[in-house]
Length: 227
Image 1 (cartoon, rainbow, N blue to C red):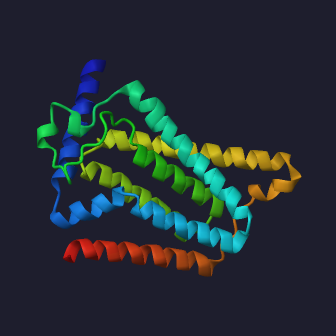
Image 2 (cartoon, rainbow, N blue to C red):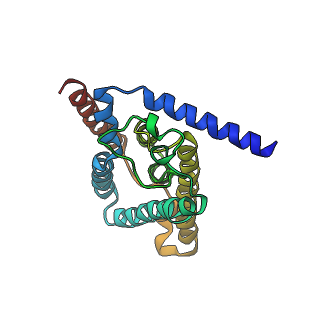
């Protein structure tokens, strides 16, 4: 009975992946390829560093260090521990469906896909930043970025939905754990008690951050659709 349920779940996972991967077009191939690239993380990182530094000064460096630790933890859990332990083949390497997967730029990814490192890393960063800054627009922006990135991994055919779901869980754990660790340290040392309070980000800067990021995303989207 248990084996039958697992088999049914795997078949459902494959079917859903092929459905998502099958909704493809030329502009979407270009857009989701860029979403999965380093372009958007670099742009968001530069904006985040700039506005954190502008409003928090040298403290911004400490925030960035803990953000880097968050991403490193998520990546090591996903790629260093879970992927080789579970050893589930990506859709592009799964003999049952690999011939049916639509490839973009002939990209197949590594051999194993559970859990998705992209999902883990983006969700970890988004959750940590949300806890750190406590601003609704930025929370919406970062979680939107994480969600679209997660979708892009399925669209590109390199991760099953359950790979992505597992990555999301790892991401939330990593983001929450590092934030809890950071604030716990702050409560024990008077000089860094400011780490236990939200980072400063006035609404005008939050709005500017949001509009720049959304504007950049729309430019990329339109360029993929019309050029």
